[in-house]
Length: 327
Image (cartoon, rainbow, N blue to C red; front, side):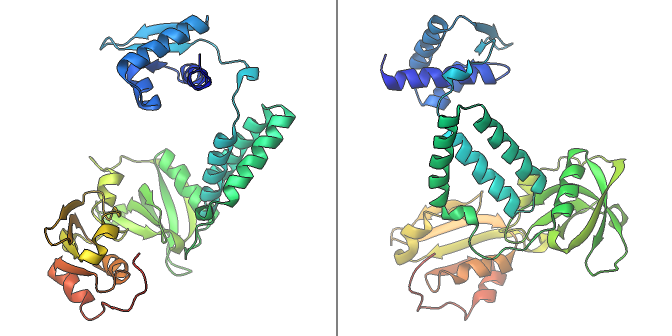
């Protein structure tokens, strides 16, 4: 057996040991990017190599392979990538003010290091730190709004319930209000998506940086029927929601900018249409003209707004031709 195949077999054994329901042929095909027949050969090797492999079939007659006990610690592979991933996630959570998540991720990282022998732990830490030092995005360049960790923790606790929140919002001294959190939209400015029963059934956005106190109440509630945070977020270009602006958006990028624009995912629902003259048309449905205008400014005079008219009027006269580079 080649070294690569041995590594794949070890990875497969770890998957079968860590997933409660085991792994199917479809899981193996997706994880290792192999054919169905190769996945079958991998399960045959798994059964031939380890004595503690069991199989079960679900209601649709799909077979799952499971290892009834985890692999011995001495068979653990090097963990630099896992340590890197946990460290990146922990730093991201800390940057976003999610201190509870950051600490939990750091505990997982420390536990992983503790299971390694001292030499491997030291090497994995050093290798992970070398990679992290080269990942500029970990430091989140660019302006962001600072969130209060205590408020973020309270929101996360309320989302688990879900429980109502009593928040002090806006100016200091404002009267508390009770809201029903449905999710958070994280970005350069983050928003809490919630209902405020006193104002009706509409879903509203509350700026996280303007919540200066938050208390979780021992009162559960029913989420809005059919609500999906993903669907809700897709109604906006950024985070700002405005039902009156929601409509089809059509941008045409010039031939000079078409290749660069094709690399972007402007919106989850976008449709890209290359044109015979080399330009590129991008279509999607969303609201938030101001956030669109902020983004379009970076493209200078290399993009035209074909629709909606309100957005076209908003950027008229502000398209520059002297930018040295495209986004």
